[in-house]
Length: 312
View: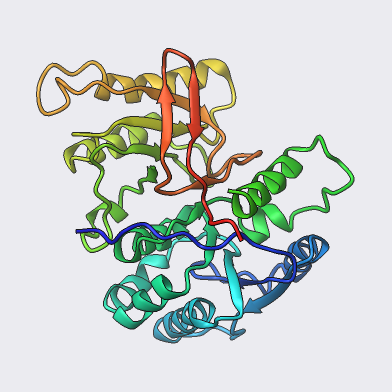
């Protein structure tokens, strides 16, 4: 049985935010970008600590040990109120064997919950914390690609300003669950999809071809993700820039989910919302994972009904 849900306290000026790099290690490549992200938080009254061990060409196990140590430091230090990932990548799953069995870390997370923000490969961290500790985390912007890309404070109409403002609203004022195909086979952290609004996005350096999209959704269907789902929210797909292209993308998904007359999905009806600005999009909405939400096709409403954090 999954642990009961816990919420971190809302961030307050003066709190300390830790930057961690749990997958790609790009701090030394983009120091100015990281400095801008640091300045952004400082301009809102927060302190920032960058937890990063700089090494030249570390071997695989050394890199894993560094990332595990940095994450544990961020989660265990009582002076740190929030953890923001610097970027995604492709190697977070290397950390899972150690993190899954770290009962002391799980207990400390429950005893001292923190705001945790990231997306893309950091989905593994969200799943781990949700499934093994009950912590409500945030699928939202990271330091290098979003928060440090430009100083947006003088342009209140820019997509990046929307991204920043949405993040601060989510983590200072305040049950969707996100899926990654390769993570769904990691049973120790796989969520219970029953009665959940599933949110999905496809994200690569180039647009996924429709064959790859079809394969990915077929895999999720075969794994039972949608057998008892309450709804599906699909992120605006990267690289599908025209209305016609996005319609073709949606057709691949609906042909698998909506046009079936056999199997467990034949009698399962749930609303589907396409082209939502989650994940690898600009602007980007910040979603609290596991919060109560409504997805109503009759009123065209998708809304989060619960706070992502406790009032301070």
